[in-house]
Image 1 (tube, rainbow, N blue to C red):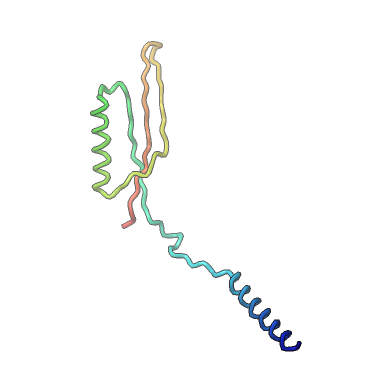
Image 2 (cartoon, rainbow, N blue to C red; image 1 turned 60 degrees about the vertical axis):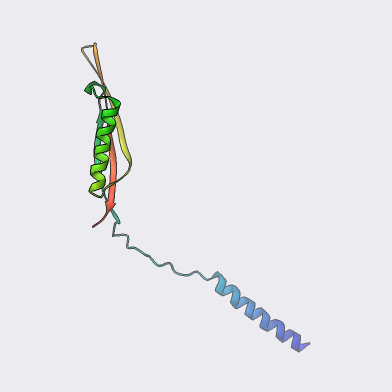
Length: 110
């Protein structure tokens, strides 16, 4: 009987050590310091006023030129921060509408 008891005791100790090692928490190591930002950002303003007398094709071409110019400089569009619509009525007869949007661009820090 003492042989079986010793074998059970050794098996229980080994199982306890295995469980302790499996549940041990490994410290996390940072791959990048938080102080170092990976990207730099800039904001570009785009506006739209229907009174400009531009066709949709001309307006799209102007926005494409802006995107391509920023891309040549290494900037990639991220998204829109804010879009604002303004409506003004002058003298009760003339109503103007204007949309202004602020777009974010980013590029890797150099």
